[in-house]
Image (tube, one colour):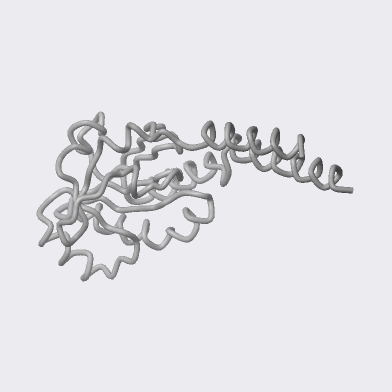
Length: 183
């Protein structure tokens, strides 16, 4: 029983350590296509967040959104959450999303991402936030560079953070200790 109590205390301590703060993401809000507000921290739910950021009036952005949508399964398999964020009027973006037949989550930027996150005001752009909510990568450009940029990003994302793996290892050791104690 002594090992079980110690094991539970360790798991609780590491669970708090492993959970992402995401304070940077919670400061940024977008709205969905029906004008409902969402915080990026809520959208990412502790995962790496890969945002395709664009404007509907830019042809290269529209083409890139279709390509990004086609890569959503790859992005998700890498352990990340793919979303598309457009800047502009919700009505125009809603029409565009229907016309392009996009399946990934689409949001409307209130201006915060464009003003505060993009260092260069160039679209399209891919913005990556890590599990802790920190902006880690911004890559600009569409067309062929979009595919190259996305491949580069996916190569850097690991499906599990080190803290997650540490918690799993500790859980396995704790389980073995408890089973040994019960014998």
